Length: 148
Image 1: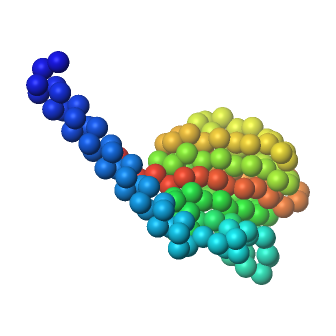
Image 2: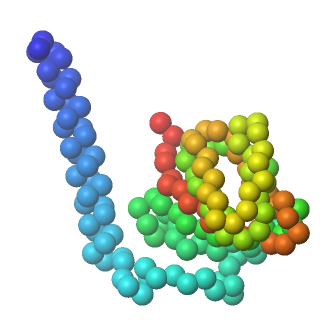
């Protein structure tokens, strides 16, 4: 292997090790001081939900509590959606708990019911709306990623 190639490989390895070490340090610091059995168990309470224009949402965990992961429940009134189709860097999962959802992904639409998961790849246009006559209740799960 050429000396310049070897140096580049070593730099990449050292950079990766530094990043991993920082992530472990952050996780250890958070685990040691932030997480308890009391704040790691979160039972839905309507009084603590946030009202939206189309229903309400409840954050079970946001990226400030976890290491960039989020878990939110959205409840949407019949015929409404939380927002227009959009895209973002983060991958996203929806899990339908109750009701009927119209799921838009990359130009196509399908209607699904409870116990169905929906995956939204990074940077692909997607959206979800209530296609039924009752409330649509679903979980939104994603990991916050920074633009590269």
